[in-house]
Length: 518
Image (cartoon, rainbow, N blue to C red):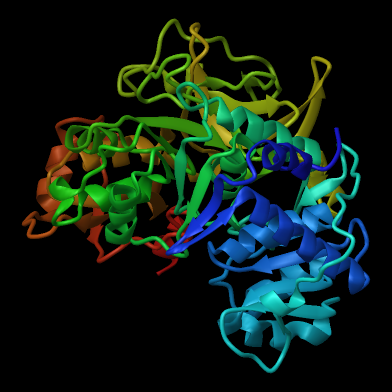
C-alpha cells in the first residue's frame, strides 16, 4: 500500500462530478477537489517541500482544510493539525517539536504564528480568509505543475496530531498511512450498509481532532460521499443544516447531543433525513441517549477510540448489534484485552452491562489494551513514553489505553472510567462516570461532571459540578438525597457545586482539572 490519498484518487476516477465538499453555497465536485489538492501539492514542491516535511494546519472546518490536508499528503508531507483556538504559547511547542516548515492558517490567527516564528522551523505561511502582512493567500498559493502522488510506505508518518497535554506537554502522535487508511476503511463499515456515495455527512467534529478527521472526513471521502463541514459547533445551525440539506449521517460527541436535547425548540428539529448517528470521544450518558432517541427517529451508536489508535477500536454498529452501555465490539482486525497491572487477562463476565452497585468491580475490571493496524507508530521523540505505552505479549504489540473496563462473553466491552479519574475514598474505588450517569437521570440536571477532591478523613471524596436545566429549581441537599437513595453511601457526592457551564475541550471532553483547581 502507498499514500492514503490513492484511495480518494480511485473515487475521483469513478465519480468526478459527484459532490465531495459542500460549504455554504459552494460545492466542490470530486474532480475539482482532486485538482485543488494537486495544485496545493505542486505549490509545496515548488517551495522546496520534500517528502516527510511537516505541514501544520491551523484552521477550523473549512474546505481549505480538506484540500490542504490531502494536498500535503499528496506531496508526501505529513500533516500537523492544530486547534484553531490555540494561542501563541500553545502552538509554540507543536510547531517547534514537529519541525513544521509550512503553516496554513486562518488570517485571524496568523499573528500567533508571527509571535513564535523565530523559535520554530516555519518558513512560510499560507493564509485563509482576510488580508495579513505575513503569508500568501490560499488561492494565490495554489500552483499548476507536478500534481503526481508521492509514494509513501505503510509505516511512513502521514499525520502527527498532539495529545491534549492535560498531564504535561502535548505529545506528538505518529500516525502512519497504514494506521489512517485502515481505520477510515473500518469506519465506513460501522454504518448500516456501509457509508454510500449517496450519503451526506455533516462535519461538526473539529477536523484537527482525529475523530473528525478519520471517522467523518476521510470515511466520507473514501466512500465517495458528500462532506459538509461547519467551522464551529452551534446546535441551532447544525440542526438547520441537517434539515435543509437532508443530511444522512451525524458524528458527534456526548456534549453535542446533550446540547441538542436542551435547546428550547428541541422538539421542533426535523432530523428525519438522518439514518444513523454515532458518538465517541467519551462515554455518552445513557439518559442523554434515551432522551435524544425519544425526540428523534434515529438511533445513536456508541464507539470508542483514542488519538493513538487513529481513533476507532470498538463500535456498536447496526451491522453486528448495539448494546446500550457498551463501547461495542472490536473492529475487524483489532484485538482487545482487559488486563491486570501484571498483564494477566481478566476473565469476561457472562453478559453486560452489570449493575455497578452490586457487582464486585475490582474483581471484573482491568485496563483496556489494544493491538492492530490502526495503533500508532509511537510518540515522536519520546522513547520513555513509548516504553510505558506498549507491552509486547502474546505475539503482538499492545497499546495501553489508560481506561478501566470489563468485557463479556458476547464480545462486548465496557469502559467504566479513566485510571487517572478513579476516586479512592476511604479505601473504596468510585468511578465518576457511574455517579454522573445517575445525576443525568434527574430532570433538573442538564450537565454534570464528577471528580475527586482532597479530604482529610477519607483521602479523597466525591464532588459533583452541576449545570441545571433551564428554569429548574433544585437544591444541593435534594441532589445529594437523590444519590443517597440510589447509590452506596460512599459513592454519593458529599459536595455539589452549581456552575453555569463545564469547561470542555473543543471535542467536548470535560477538563476536570480546571474544575478542581478553581
